[in-house]
Image 1 (cartoon, rainbow, N blue to C red):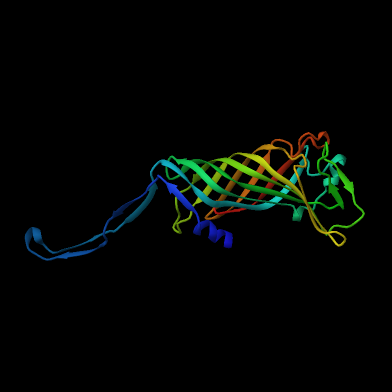
Image 2: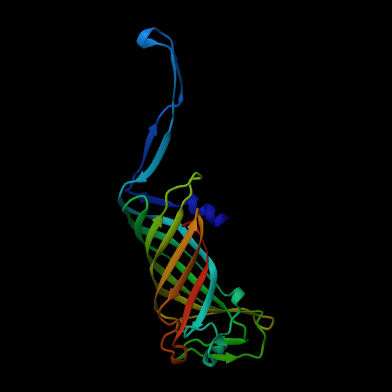
Length: 264
């Protein structure tokens, strides 16, 4: 809830588009007139109809934002299957604790009308894989490899962080009586690797963190879709290229994420 409040309290946007309001008012009431001849008494009624239409003029916009907050599950697809192949069994993970989280911090776009606009944004995206096995992914290795450890880890997390750059095609419906509307956003998304990390917690060694690229793809390419009503919706993201590069055993291993999105 604090994140939602911050996204609206601290968002600063310079927008060249203007919102205009067209109002048509017809009164409703009762007329009574008394007289002679053509001015004979009569009673008439008339109706009142009030129509308020909000519209935005076309134009460019640029600004700092804190929006499109994604929180969901990350899933590994091994050649299209949810079951990992024998070569990738060391990456066996706990689905309920394998998460995707991200948000945008800047955007530049063009609005065609009140219903449609396009924009390119910049933000951050994390994928946290909670490993089941007591292993340590090795740093500075020629391929993605690991060692089997003799101690138990209460947490063994294998994660990557990316700078995400989505190109979005945005559509929204007309406002309803509550001032909300349906949104649909889709398009390609590109990611630039920032870091890879192994985080482990055990009784023997306490908390440990190891940073490396771990052969995560330096540049990832995918598509996304978001849809919802009001400030809340659902999202899904799929990346076409492999999660890891220069590691032949992991060819065909891809990343798919889905969950809730806020503030879009």
